Image (cartoon, rainbow, N blue to C red; front, top):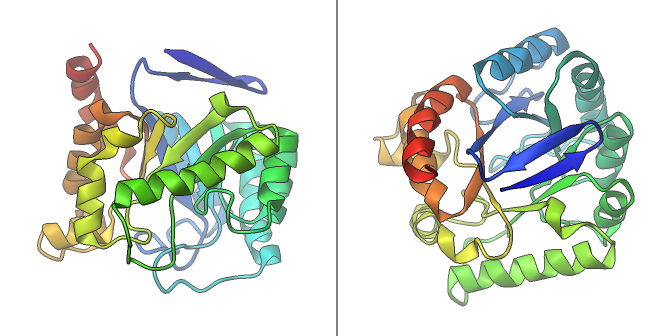
Length: 273
């Protein structure tokens, strides 16, 4: 077990699986777009997820689903910043922001956010995000991503090479390695076959850094369940998360917090002892 301290908060890794609750401040996210677009609804939902067992709230202001509409940096900041400011004051919980734009990261870190969750693993810009993270030193999640679903080599080897580039940026910007988690990026640059292969082989990545897994309600689960809509994919999501705990997963990123909390109370006793 280890403890990561950020500001007045801490994250204990290894004792039990931690839950990151998803809070989308968007009109177009694939699963819950528009549900929490109003700031009061967003805050109330965050508080409910905390009551249900969330250890972290992950605030996102721009959908990254396939075919999403890219919004301006200003619009993304206008969506997430008021929510982050209120959450920092009103809840006793780590606050994460899901963004790959350094301008957004800068504003939310100044407002007190504890975690930056970057779906491009610091590799979207020319090192600007890495500079901001290096200055403020939050907990950092670097996710594997690519624009195509084609791989010229073994996917796990390709992912390792991707993370090597991320860790070069991490080291070059004095970001503490002990603050870093990796995310295999299920559903990003991967088809259903590759998603399943990565999930089967997650253990091959755990030597790099602790793993955060985000499979919640994703399309491949809906396909496996017979093309069911996103909000009917909870049980399938739980399966992916429980089966991944002993492969190095320390944090799961989910929409359905209470259901996962109940499942983890049993699974962690079996897997972690």
